[in-house]
Every structure is written in structure tokens, then in C-alpha cells.
Amino acid sequence: MYKNMFAIRSLFTLALILLVLGGNIYAQQPSDPTSARISQYDTLKYRNGFTYIGELLNKRYHGFGLLLNEKGDTVYVGHYTNGMRNGRGKYFFRNGNIYDGDWKMNNMSGIGKMKFHNGDVYEGQWVHDQRSGKGIYLYQNGDKYEGDFVESKKHGYGIFTQKDQVYEGYWENGLQQGEGKLVRKTNEFTETYRGMFDKGKFHGQGHWILQKDSVRTEYIGNWEVGERVGPGKYILQERVFEGNWKINEVTGKGTCTCPEGIYEGEIRLGFFHGKGMMNYRNGEKYEGEWVRGKRQGTGTHWYADGSIYSGAWYMDLPHGQGVLIREEGDTLSGGFQNGEFIKVEMENQRE
Figure: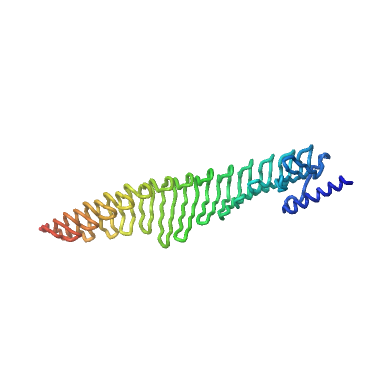
């Protein structure tokens, strides 16, 4: 009689504990119906202070049970098989982490949810105590990752949403790797990149757009470790630069389609610099030397009225020694200063 009363009291105690823990998923507590040697809800006390309340098979945890530590706090509540956590269960780690989900041979394996002591939460697939497969990771600061995991790292395809940016694409060992899209927004600008990544950096072919107020800037081309390097096209408002890039600046021979015309020649740090030719939209043409976007050095300019100037230039104006052949056929040769003739020798070429 007393033995039956104790069994009833133990069963009531376990049910009350489960109710307090809010373990609705454990409302059904199956036992092993194939074995008559299961004694439901036995209580085992250990020298280290731990207590087990639950089902046993051959003196091993088997079925549904509750494990308490020396302070009476819950360590594990859930299902066992031959002494090992197996099936559905909830585990309370000493560091404050709480796992609620599937187990296999004492390992977190299957579908489960982990609440970390720092406020982070992961819910998804597990393999051998590692986040592996598809899942959602919520950071305590509001960031969110949804996608593939391998050995607890972002790996595969996933979307990472942060306060001011969203990345959608492929990952490897926790870093953006392969093809992806990154959109970054602030109060001042919106930045978008579509293309290839390597170890979290823009690397390979990519299309970058920066929108700041009404000003739109684009780059389409090659990247290396987050910088524009190699062949690429740069679009700024109505200007289109095409050429080779070095550390985010177009350098070497290239072209620029501009409102004033089309330039072909040497470019340095984003400026027409060196030898080049500009075909202006009004029909004029300049071929010669440039310095930081200005005609400077020696060059020849063909004007729309038929005149031709060949000589020295400074800051986009004839400056120094030069020769002007006017439409009428007259030749003016001498010195120029800031575009004005200061010393002129005139020779009439007409017969």
C-alpha cells in the first residue's frame, strides 16, 4: 500500500514539475510497452547530489525522465534510450544556454531551438551538437540570419539582415563567398553591390551603385579584395569612364563618354592625364597632352569654324608658343597668354 502511495506521489511530483517548466511538448509521456521491466517514475539519487526521476530499463534511463542537479535545478527533461538522451528533450547548460529539441545518442541532432545566455536564439537543424542544415539565428541586437549552416557557421546560401544592411547570397565558413547581393542604407546614401565575394570582400566581377541624394554613381567591372582593380566601367552622372583600374582609380589608357564629347587616351586617378584625344559634340577636336582633366602641354585643336591651333596649352587655354591657322587661311604665329595673342606675326597665305 505504502509502495503504491509513493509511486502515485512520485508521478504527481513529476507532473507538477513538468507543468511548472511549461513543457507542453512533453504532455504525452510514452514508455516502452514492449518491456515489462520498466518501472515508471523511479527516483535515483547520486553522491554528487544529482537526482533522476523517470523511467528505467535495466537500471538505465529509458523512456521519459527528469534530471536535477545538486541544487534541485533542472538539467534535462525529456526522453532517454539505454541511458542516453534520445528523442525529444530540453537541456539546461551551466552557462545559461537552454536547448529544446531533438537528441540522438546524447548529441543535439535533428530539429531544435537554442536560447543562448547572451540573448541570441537559434532554431533549426542540428548535427552532432553543431548547427548544421537550415536554420534561423536571431542576434540579441536585432540582426538576423536565415539560411544554411555547417558546423555552426554560415555556410551555403543565406540572408543576413542587419540594422543598416542586408546580404543575400552564398557563404563559406562564416564569410560571404561566391555570388551575392549587398544593400547598405544610411540616412545619407544607399549602396548596392551585386557580384562575386571572396572572404567577405568584393572580389571578381561586380556591379556597384551608390545613390546619394540625386547623384548616382556606378561601377561595373573587376574587384580585388574590396577595391576596383582591373578592367571596368565607371558611371558618374553623365560621364562614363572605361579602362583599367588600380586601387579604386582608373589609370592607363581608357575612354570617357562625357557631355562635351568622347575622350580616348591616357587617364590617371580619374582625370584625363597624359596623351589623349577629345572629339567634342560640337564638331571640334583636340589631340595632345592633358594634365588633371585640362588641356595642358602641347596639342592641336580643330575648331568648329575651321580654324586650327597647334602649340602650347595651359589650363585649357592656348598659352606659350603656338600657331593659329584661321578659316580665311591666315596664319598667326607667336606667343599666347591665357588664350590671348600677345606677340603675333601675321602671314597671309591667300594668293
